[in-house]
Image (cartoon, rainbow over all chains, first blue to last red; front, side, top):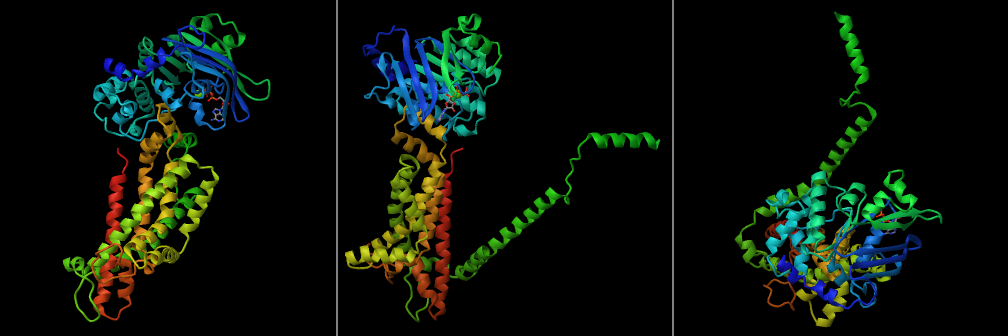
Length: 281
Length: 298
Ligand SMILES: Nc1ncnc2c1ncn2[C@@H]1O[C@H](COP(=O)(O)OP(=O)(O)OP(=O)(O)O)[C@@H](O)[C@H]1O
Ligand SMILES: [Mg+2]
């Protein structure tokens, strides 16, 4: 833990940069998306999603409402999509991540990501987990860090005897846990998780949820989930997105956001109430 | 006694779908016919292949001894001799060609697959590469004759290697592109998500993941180049002596086979057979090596 904290000392450097925006210090990422386009298609509008430091922020909403899109805006993964255009701002500890002088490559080393579909590399299980560590010239004990990450991702017992096998030889759920281990190995200060448990059994799901709760003491997590119970169990804040079909397209927007308890127990919006009761999906 | 049992049979027959294979009903029949057709075609296709191999082993195997590798080719009525200089020449020239065409080809493949797949340069390059694969290889020889042999003032191993490189390049480029395009986008996304630069994604993910496919392409090109005589006719020519310098005319297996197989001497004809066998063995060794190197780590 200490070795990692030292090796990954860069996040503190970023934290040390004086905050320019007048944001409370407890906001890790202030994400205000006015309009997000894929080509001419308006995918998301008017969504202001502040992500609090040291908390788990849950994103819920029907399929296609733009949860993944919002998540991918946070670490500029959408830059890789040529037709992506965006209006608004995303501030990471006060710094505008879409500013011209910001290198998305460096940004992504502080903001880890677990994707909706498992995507291990064509290399051994060990190398998969060690990938980010090697990339960041990790100086601690590589073996230990890999083992620790695999244990936290609830995968160690299943793979400890075959660390040299290909990551692709694992089952779908195991691959997803491998990707979680890979993402947390570098202990990024923010972790974006896009439905990390959708391919997992209840036991592994529970372990991942415990991991998230353990991690939030030091890190910040944004979690997309389709599982209401999961959001209730782990999220401190919940953002509910809906789809607006009034103008012809299917545009996602933030319906409401607040403390998880409030969202689930007495939502302000009718739409939220209906969604939570399962009246539409 | 009989009545109830037939009743039961009847009932089961109605309830259970019939699952046994029946060979003479529509779908099953066409499936078996197709299977038979595929087998016949496969056997027909391998007949020439295996008869060539058989001929090579029977007729070339007789001279497969140490002398073959250590001696120089015999002149006219001489007996004995070997093809040592031609083996060296082929290895050297194919080596030169590989050194030129593989790095250039793979980098071009990276550009076509990843850096600028939709650019005008890319589509022009792709079109050219496809056209070049259909180029008669003798034209590569003529082109290098004009561009290199005349400029250097003589036939040489270098010119031969460059001519072979020209014939290898399109295969390497196109297969490398194809292999790297097969690397799933989500795998690249994962690497970008970890904070890789574009260069790192290519070096650490795209190239290693596409390596087996790239090596297959390289092997195809190497095998083709090793057996190609036309590009060497005007570039490396031939030599009856050991290779001393890359700037001299150089012997090669393919030209040796071409020369000796037309001679009216049994000795030379035997050597041509042996050289063919050696050529096939060289290609075989390289393909096996590339399989081993390029095997995805399980
Ligand atoms: N690369 C892309 N190019 C074009 N359109 C896209 C792209 N990615 C997403 N979209 C569109 O943006 C909208 C939101 O997609 P997104 O993946 O963010 O939804 P989601 O809320 O994550 O859905 P799910 O719960 O099914 O994962 C969809 O209408 C989708 O078609
Ligand atoms: Mg999604």
